[in-house]
Amino acid sequence: METQTLILDRLRRSVAAKEDFVHASLADVQRLVAMIRTTLDAGGKLLIFGNGGSAADAQHLAAEFVNRFLIKRRPLAALALTTDTSALTAIANDFAFEHIFSKQIEALGKKEDLALGISTSGNSANVLRGMEAARAIGMQRAALTGGLKRPGGDLAPLCDLVLNVPSDFTPHIQEAHLFIEHLLCELVERQMFPQS
Image (cartoon, rainbow, N blue to C red):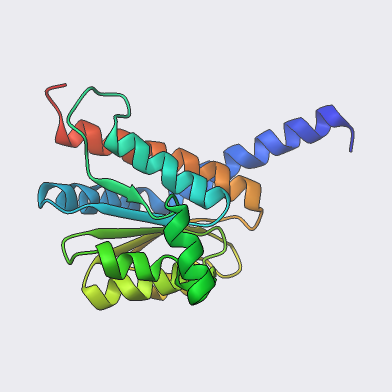
């Protein structure tokens, strides 16, 4: 495939992944916005986690809530469980990599918090263990996933709500996740700070 054809094909498929997601999950996006708002209004926090590109997404999303997205407003409580290298490496070294999120949730999570896992496959062992820990505490649980053959993977039954991008192509799932994350930030800001 020549370069120009490849670029146009990837653009078309990336846009289609986002459109397919919105058509299938519009109501669920609104549900997650309500869950986030309820959590923050009650004094809870978002605990966000994932691996690789999803770890970067967790940090990006947490930063948008803590600082701001589009509106100048008070900080909102969000924490990426991917940023404390001492905790991550100690847990991985002393126990196992699959516990890097669950141990942090056990230490930091409260019933009024919301756990948000990000996994393109829905099958990352450490994200699954994190959700199990959040469930044991009684936290609300949501996930961003992908997949056509197995939507949400093993993560889906552990969550109260799953936003699944209906694609099996990892780059398009990740591109759609960033779109979803920005939507969540904007909608939460607009609802919590309408005067702005």
